[in-house]
Image (cartoon, rainbow over all chains, first blue to last red; front, side):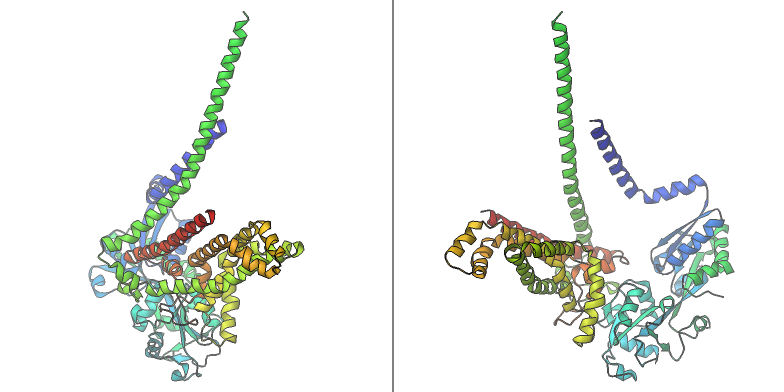
Length: 280
Length: 304
């Protein structure tokens, strides 16, 4: 009987705990930080910058008495939060729009991200213009022989709607999700795109620089090779900055120190570890 | 003097009885609680999915008709039509049935009627083991073997296709069909077979004219269960389907069934987009509900 009583108690406790944790995720984080009386830096924004920011924050927290809270909610939402002061720092994986700059935001480029168009290693097409890339992904060009390759049908591989890389790619190449050719294979994740392209000689896709290896062949854009150097010199078009943005009034000392850390050699080492391109 | 110990004993008995009853009622309450827990989970899940999924149609002014019959799914442009996915789900399931049911049924017949004990001892566990393979491994198998095979030997432009989905699903539904159908066939009374054989019917004739018809409702249940497995499968399908947003017109088209649409986009979705994925879940759930209803009908008929 005791056992059963205890078991019932335990069940109650467990279910209570489940309910409580489900309701109180945010509250828990708050109490923790106030208990330990740490300075808190609230950061929100791009899901592409997020993983990098997490790694930087982890490294920074090791040696400094701060708590960094990162919410990955998308670039636009993060920028809005930074303008309103909801978050101290916003993360963006796209350039700021004019009205966003006008509302008094400071931007700091913490890294660059490069996107590269990839094909099967046997594909003879090695160089395309952005216009040609657009024609491929919108279905205007459907055979590799129109681009100087073999007589093979083109199979387009893209990411799922809502993916940061896909947004960035479409923005730079200049077409909308609705224009993407309907028969495109949709793969979830960079790795999946790479595998699909590496096993299909018809295929073309796009991935982040960090995923480049011998299993696929990379395409030059306007004659410029996809290298970190070319991104830094702003010659390579398929690239985007990773930005930290902040409202001047809201930036605390702790926040400024974190940004300084990111731009320091230690911080930039973390950047290159995660596969992004360091600023220096 | 003598009455005292008896009284004491009585009291003792009463105590232990009380204890016993309390234990009884406590344990029955515990069991009730456990039973309610699963009902509660069902209600919570269904309630949550319906609450989130119906929101855009009730509060957002989206038309449910356009949602079901719309052919464009472009969340970033506010277009939500899942008709291609419904068609893909149905085609994939029917295709898997066409391949999976005969193979599964013949396997079940072989195992229950024809196979010598020694052969059965090998095949039966093998089939059951097939059911235990995590579905993502079926997907990896499909991606590594079936997709390249279709590309290289059938000359398809891309192996990720309706055909690949059908093949993977057909393999996945086999264990369900085989085990349930085998049990049903085994449950047919021996006298049926003996009667038929005694009348001079051949063994195969007996199986198909007597045993299988007698086990019909069980076999139908097996098929419906397999169907449920096929229509709800996600992880294996997501890897081999290609997930293109077109209404399939041939076996070689890439498709996106309902399940993969949810799994593929939930990670990045927010706002209406997310709610529309829940709405996709409602449609999927309706399919499963209909199947369960059919299954209940079948087993009720079988009981009669």
